[in-house]
Length: 144
Ligand code: DQA
Image (cartoon, rainbow, N blue to C red):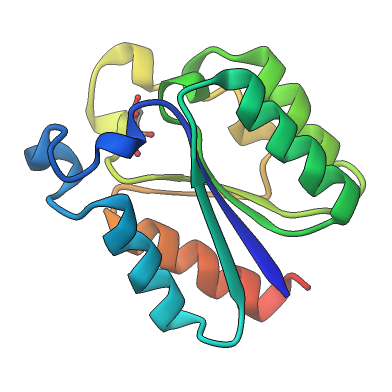
C-alpha cells in the first residue's frame, strides 16, 4: 500500500536551509531513510512550494483513503484552507500525521500555533527525520 509523505514550502531546500535547525539531510536522504524503514510499502514523498498543489494532494488522499505524513512548513501556522483539506481526509476516518523536524514550541511565538493539529490524527515534532520515522511506524502498525 502507498503512504503519502507530503512536504510544504521551503522543505525542498533541506540540507542547506538552516542546518542547525533542520539538520544536514536532504529530502532525498529522507526518502531513503523511510524506504529503508518500510521496504514493502510504496513511500510517495513529494514537496511543493505552491499551496494549491498541496491541497490537490490532500484531495487525492481524501479520495483514496491513503495515509498521509504531512510537514506543511509555515502553512501549518495560518492556512485554514490547509486545515479544511486535512479534515477532508481525517473526518471520514483517514489518517494525517502532522510532523515537524524542529520543535515549533521551542521557537518563535508565531510557530506555537498550528491550525491543523486539531484535525490531524496526531502530531510528532522535534526529532528531525525521526519525526517522520515515528509517524511511519504508527501508520504501519495502525493505519491501512
Ligand atoms: C517546520 C516548522 C515550521 O515552523 C517551519 O515554517 C518549517 C519547517 C519543521 O519541520 O520544523 O518550514 O514545519
